[in-house]
Amino acid sequence: MNKRYSLIIFDWDGTLIDSVPNITHSLSVAAEQMGLPLLDEETYKGVIGLSLINAVRTLYPELSDDQVPQFVKQYRTEYSRLEQQPSGPFPGVTKGLDLLRKKGVAMAVATGKGRNGLDRSMTANQYQAYFQASRCAEEARSKPDPLMLEQLLEELGVPVEQALMVGDAGFDLQMAGNLGMDCVAVTYGAQPKEKLLKHDPVFVADSFDDLIEWMVVR
Image (cartoon, rainbow, N blue to C red):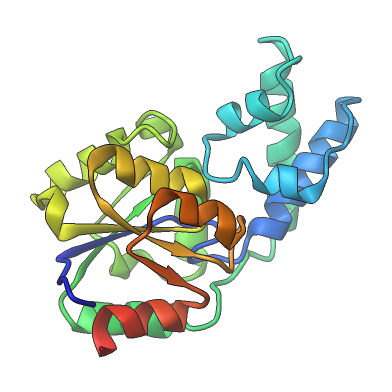
């Protein structure tokens, strides 16, 4: 890594935590219960990163304002059932976060997940101590609007040129680009490499170990 970053901002689902299968399954179950047509898995993956309400409206624009909350409720019921055994991290994540912390790198989370969901997942995986700050869907505008990144930079007192966004979805990378922030794409999450490359990441990681090697080993 030619440039040293003082703050790394991570997406959560599909970047740190291997929860994408539970998300796509819950979307399909909610759709079925609402009598909506089932979409293919790649389409469901394509909205991961958006706030849940924005994701539902993108997938099913025919839903009325009254029906969207019903879909959200069905989704959350199914996702909560699946997450009784919480999704764990991708290989190498815990070791990598440990190394970044030892190197004195500040870390934060910017996610389309709700606050309750993030707190549950963070607690289940014992990750609270790694992150100095976080922003969730209801605390800012949905990705790719850069507001949550702006809030994190202000809270932590870090200029944008010293921060890096890491994510598995085009919305993550577009959000960073909208603020002029460098970004890294990870290809093991929700969206394929060819889609991520459109957003000009400074690095593409095929595993979390690749990411850590690029950040701190080289």
